[in-house]
Image (cartoon, rainbow, N blue to C red):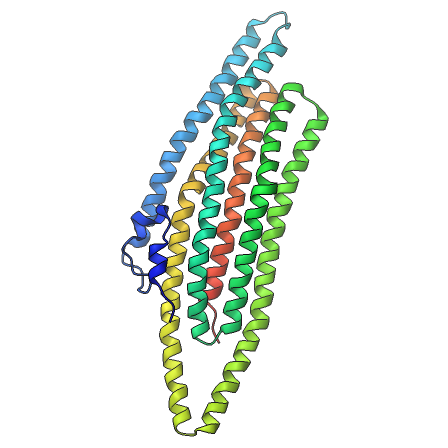
Length: 334
């Protein structure tokens, strides 16, 4: 039988307030989902406030640049006003973006760390019901792809997002078509890597699930037939007892799975709220900026919002992998 105490002990700090004291082996208490949703609402409200202040600063810079440009009747200072606006926006956004980039990477690491406790427990429960090959294959696939995702995040995606932000600032200041093309390449690289990794993971999980699931089903039938044939009376009793034990372990697996899903959801609340709020409000600010200021300033704000969106997508891929893997292990049946 799998050990569920480690699950509660390894709960991330983000989930302690909500799931602390909840027995992973028991079905969730009434009102637990409401607590999760309430916590998500509070986090989103707080994130919207923080993002609103940051977007407000960018809008203020835009309005000041627009006013300064309107006072320059000769048009000789417009370039310097634009450069000053770009510098101010870059200074505000870069410091803000750096902290949230680290926040997103930290959340991804937390998901990976907790998966190393959660998935073996679920896999052990699934293996106890006879799905040995399926459980091992699904756990191995998730562990491998989570490590690949973390490596890509640190070495490729995050540097590419930083490069995209730097190119956005440079493009706003200079207005060069080559910089615009480089920006598109950076964004396409991140999108291709995250999309490709997600598709590869789901495809590999489905393929290994079909192959290993068939092997488990054949093994279970052969074993049950062999025991019943060797010991006609006792063998039948043993088969029935094994079936009852498998049903009990299946209930335990489902409870642990629901507990794990809620824990992953709790970890995702903070970064998803913070990054999502900044993405949405920066895009909204860019739309407002396009009505009152130079096009390059609005494009800069829009690009900065895209940076938050890419970090959000990175965390979304990690969460998606865990959700799919947990659901797959819960539904591992013979």
